[in-house]
Amino acid sequence: MNSLERIRATIKKEEHDRPICICPGGMMNYITTELLEKGGFNFRDAHVDAKTMADLSEYAWKEGCFENMGVPFCMTVELEGMGSKIDLGDNKREPRVVEYIYKKIEETTDVKRIDLSEGRVFAVLKAISILKERHSDVPVVGNLTGPVSIATSLIDSTPFYVALRKKGDICHEFLRKITDELIKFGSAMADSGADVIMIADPSATGEILGPKYFKEFAVKYLNDLVEGIKKNHPDVIVIVHICGQMTPVLAEANEINSDAFSFDAIVGLKDIRKNMQDKIIMGNVSTYAIEGQDEEKVKQMTKLCITQGMDIISPACGLGMGSPLKNVQAVLTGTKEYGGESCLK
Image (cartoon, rainbow, N blue to C red):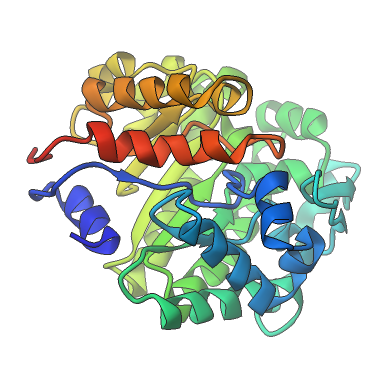
């Protein structure tokens, strides 16, 4: 099977030869300093230029890192499109927001609309088109930052989390406008050729929100986002990742209507399956191990994920920029070595 056939069969719970091994991009960035230096890339250029972005994603795939290609390589593209000031970083640092737009939750009534025809937003869409034209049989992933995480990057997280409890009506309006912009961007990614849309919403973690607010604010707008993208692109695969300790809200997370769900390494598959028996689960090889252990240890952790029944093998979160390339490659090597002959569900 090629990798696109493999991930589609996985999502449909059809017979396939082994688990697929992916790392989407976005928050779950798979580009490391060693990879950049080996390929002679400038990371800043890859954040703004469509061809360089596509070339770097393709290079990581050709180097045997993962079985997909994905863009962008950070969580700041939508935020810049909404007016945030961004530091693009360098070959050792990923881009980050350097200044919040809003200081008070009452100021969030006017969310800037994303222009799909300019800037880094347009570069991402063009890069997806380039990658799909080059490799029709490889999954191309378009990455979105989730609604709550966008909100906590437009305004400091502390007043936002307080407002969820005291000024919920304003927060609902804020998240609704953000979600509308994300639907527009995600749909444009699918139009450009993305096979998978990955939504990463680390600030929506259950350990901060708790079950009540996780359901009211995270589940609602993630579902609105998934359904908005699927409305005109029913065949696109949508995966949702949320960081942190999610065990207290797994029952609520099961209500998210994505095709698959990704968890951090802190959440064990046994706990996940108690509440999400039918969900396709992706993960969750420790990114700390990938950066700090040796390649054999990484392969063994990959084997454990496979033997426990993980459907899609992936790092549990974004790779550290200092991760050794051989350790990154060990996740795919381990998947191929221990993946078995059949994954019929």
